[in-house]
Image (cartoon, rainbow, N blue to C red; front, side, top):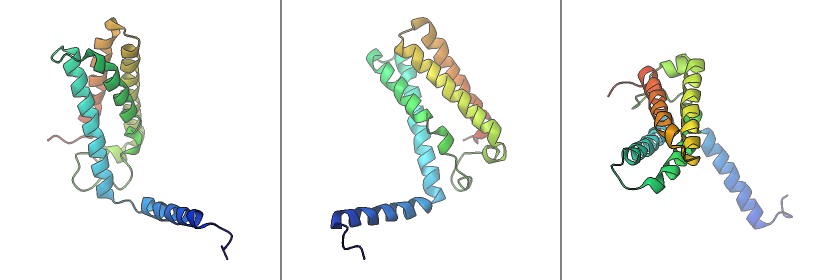
Length: 151
């Protein structure tokens, strides 16, 4: 039936079919682990930025890299809280799924603050960098206060 299709194309189509099935059957525990690792990456960049801005490490040339990386990770925030990932070993509160519009707005505020901080860093606007980073912290805290369990 498919004799006219070359073997490499047949193999590629088979792999594509397997990957589509695998994607459709994502394990909620894996979703939670992915979210946790995404948030750890976020915290890692925020921590590195804080050390640079407080001049506790001598890596000012790394600031833009961490700001851009933080912005890139923040793009994933809306995707890391899918339905069905509200159980198991997670600090995510049910309010995320009970109040999705407010949660999305809170995420957007954090993303906007991160974008403004990144823009200040890339413009080398020394007057705006500190206050913009404080706003990032405030937006992260607001989300954690309403949507994350205490440790």
